[in-house]
Amino acid sequence: MEAIREAVKEIGALDVILLALSCYIIWKLVISRLFAKPAPEEPRIPELPPMRRHDMTVEELREYDGVQREDGRICMAVDGKIFDVTKGKRMYGKDGPYGIFAGRDASRGLATFVASAEAIRDTYDDLSGLTPSELEGMREWAAQFSEKYPIVGRLLKPGDIPEIYSDEEEDKTGSVSGSMTASSISSIGSEDKDDKKED
Image (cartoon, rainbow, N blue to C red; front, side, top):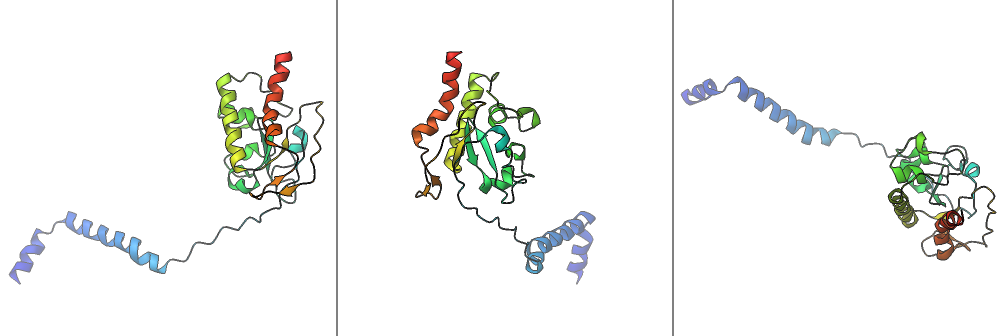
């Protein structure tokens, strides 16, 4: 009994605080998890059928902002290519960090790493004023997007005539394939270069 009294005398206020803190941490880590309610699942976004390929003007692209259309489809353009980014709704939807690019040409914003209204044009953006390194960065973004999202057309410059795509068939990846071939996809970005050389 005498040993217990000596031990109690040596326990200081700091020891009591550390003991209480340890008990609290154990309670939070172990006990509270046993009685915790499961977190509600996020609502599952219904998967849309593949989008029919068609070229769009800047004005037509705006309709695909995830809000205006009943199906909630989101498209955005990068380097003249239009991508269906609907499956990335958390990133490109109305409240996403890149929601500013939904239904818009994101080329300038991605090239300059600016995700705000100052990087968005209301009319066709010929990307003049971008440096060669910014243009290269934008092309790298387009390459990354083409690996993750289906290309559904090209962004039309004023006066361009939309391409008519053949009846679509699903390929092995589940994305829609039509008459847009690898050569026509790679030529989308090169058309602007050819036009600038002629000027």
